[in-house]
Length: 385
Image 1 (tube, helix red, strand yellow):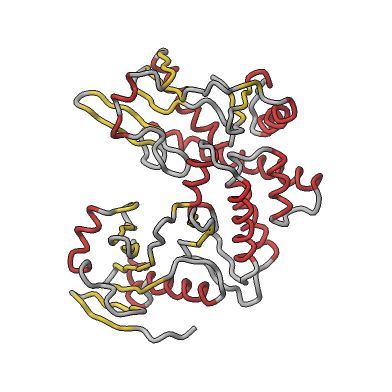
Image 2 (cartoon, helix red, strand yellow; image 1 turned 180 degrees about the vertical axis):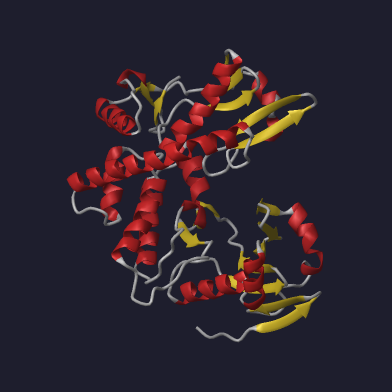
């Protein structure tokens, strides 16, 4: 799709914009916005928000080869072009507004969707660990994935974290498009399968076996329930192998307080480690710590320090595998764990659902007794302490 772009040069940056005025009021002060309104950051890439208008991705080329490539073909330009192509193909995507570059750095502007939230965050915060229903969410999500899969594009990194959910319209939009492409000979069956499986197993938390089987068939990974059950269990086995192989690295990250999993709170000489949901949201508001820990909000367990640390670390491993549990939400080193308090409506898990969880645990290499499983009022089947 050809589109006339507005070209501007400001403070050494060369900009290509879809409409005039996009740089007004903020670009001259973008370091302030980056400092005060940063959404996420790492040494190479930072994302910040400009009022309620748009998000800006600032990226610095790492390494000599990437720097040279960025001088001739800035990464933001390539991502912008992909965004336009997806938009033209009818794929729900955040609107790409423009791009700019200066030496090894580039910026990409995308429209801010006012009530949008990461689909991953919504899934964990509102559904898996909340009380919202999966019915509408899953139905609309399957429609969104079907639209993308029929667009002729392949995205090697299509997953929950790259998709936004808009609760007001119950719709979805792709937000991180880099890497998506339209293969010259069409999307291969292997590529289709890869994208479908990435989506399916990202949702292993929060769905029971029957839901997993239904979703497997909706994603066209199987034609019938028997085959879908096999696809599901085989996928869990493969996932277990990857998680086990990565566990030494993940364990080190957890012990170092890696921000993807943990938020640290310090007050004087005391500190607390606050668990994050897999979607990135802290399980306990850090502004309320430590005051909120002093009431009856959590089940507090004190144990020898080495046991407390192992219990804390192992809870993350279980969560990565997809085994739901009564989770420790805060660790106060060296020996205090604050567990989520179960609601009064918790009851023994129904036999059929318990049997499915026990079978899946065996796939993960764990032995669980069905007597240790509870069903919460929101439908969660959890392993009690």
